[in-house]
Image (cartoon, rainbow, N blue to C red; front, side, top):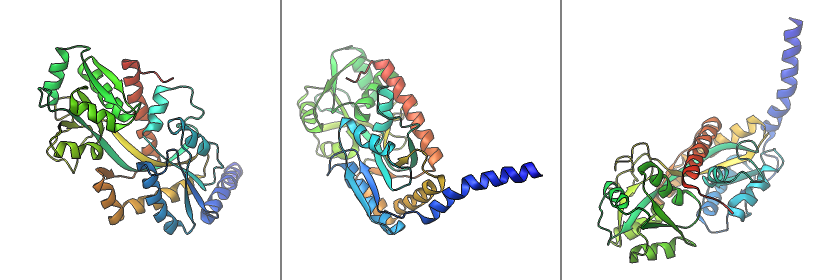
Length: 320
């Protein structure tokens, strides 16, 4: 009994400071670091959530843009910040992709950051030029197999748009050449003109070209059809079993942030994402509002890293 009492006393002594800190939290303004430039999707999303988070927690919430190195500069800053819940990170699937393509990052998403919750998922749309004589993913695969190394696809850099087609190449066993671009606009122009034969990026960026009859849309990349394009099948429905790539936006704190603080942030952000006006804004951009427990989010990140690592290994993608 004495040993049990001593053990309970030790556990209580270790647990009480964290609980006390969480009960007082937050005691300072909260900073959300966005590792991308102002005005982009991630920046706007962080500001939308941050405005509501200030109301939920009763402290000002400031958004700070620390862009560079594909998001790694801002992410490293948060990974090395004080683990007190006053410095947070809003980042995307690029965290998992970065871990998959490089072993030389200055931080580790799995050990240096504490997942709080995702806030949305979005999927990509696979399109081809009207001049390409295919009207389905099955026909595209057959066409590519007849022309190994002669077809090309564009991308705006290493990320889920690029991995969308790299994963298709691996799963369908086709040889298609990658042509990198600086942004969506020049790639879409070349796609429409037939200089490249495939392109994939987020639904919002491409659906107007499809609606306007400038490209053919073959599939979306998520588990379910996009609400804004219900007539377009998923990749799995289109004949690629097990295919799925979705992007997510989510929030993180430095590792070793007390669990009660993580839980409070998780619950506050979940309430925000459930608000009708916030959900509607996300849906209008082609995204799906979603939240989950820190454990489930961590498992999602690990699964993404494993998936993207397989694609990187199979395709030979390298980062300089």
